[in-house]
Length: 182
Image (cartoon, rainbow, N blue to C red):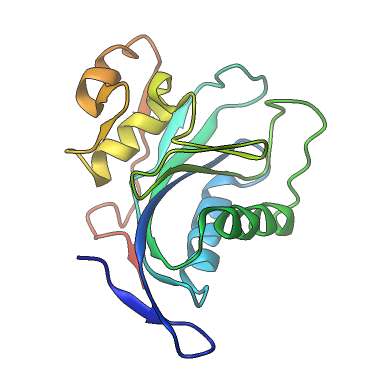
């Protein structure tokens, strides 16, 4: 059952689950991932946030240094396009520029999945149209929601199809702690 949150006018809206891909390969991407999670967790319309373990991956359809990637699971009362706008504000605060498609970046936040909804607008496609082909999304997503099934199939089966993509879990001093922000 979804949690509820009062909005500024006192109306209660149910909190919905969303998954957000987070990563970067310029500057200090580990710090950027953690700061983005912290910033998002402080938004008044985000009730809970859980961050997957971090992974190091080679660029996919991109160039530059290796990426640090993770997935965040949130409960939110933000509607999809409002959530996208918040994610883009966080990216911009971290110096994100878009000189060309798939350019190296300081921070990348992608709305991957929004409460099982299918959205197809000029500025937002959910579920993310390529996440089923990317180990750097599937592995951390499986860490958070092993039973989640995408339109293309179960996460484990999709991840097996990406076994040629190298992905290494980043060992961290607090890796044994539950990475929950709230």
